[in-house]
Image 1 (spheres, rainbow, N blue to C red):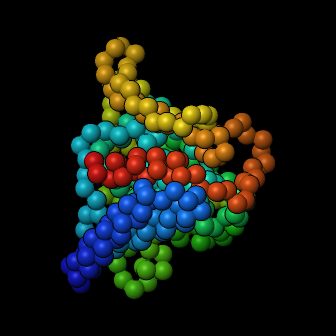
Image 2: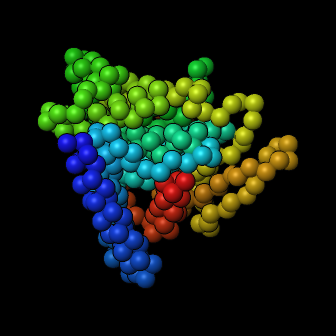
Length: 297
């Protein structure tokens, strides 16, 4: 049965990838802002369909994506996960510079974070903000996703934490909580630890990465994706290290009207999000280009 699921998921995956290429071709030739925004929404929806196929592959024991060899900045992986979400404008991300994740883990970590972000955005008010932080910890690195949503009862949260720590075998009941089961299997594949806890007005999901999946600290790499606001909109790729040795550094300038900069000082109060926020074509193109590059590697 697993082999059947893998084969069907790969066939569907191939069709979705072809559909994405058609949408991208339409985007390149489109000049009308409203139609371009509609195409971007279609692209985000198609990306979600792709991840559903990848979920099926994970549950059936298959490999969803090609694995890379070169380390990738944790900040770039968080940005790729955010870009998969249809409501990425609601996410505030702040990730420590210099944290490098093994290329073997990178694609699965993007998948895992995207599923957690999907839950955080989907189960919180449309005017609320979802915050993502990432930094080195005493035993590796830690990514925290905090929403201001409906929360959950303590007994349900304990049950889900058990599921994440020891994901069950696939059966009919698993499909009701497919996202969390997939997260559990991806975490077990790389010895990651995912836990849910109560937060002020919502849920806090914590992902702990062991040192084994990170590049050693002695490399002192400074590569990172830095999110800033301002004009002009551009993507600048440079090679820079304090000691003069080359390493890739990505600097992405986002237009000021796209609320995806680093976390502002906390006031203790929920930060409202203006609704609706129009998709910015240039921002969408860069996010898509960066994400697709990470998938390919």
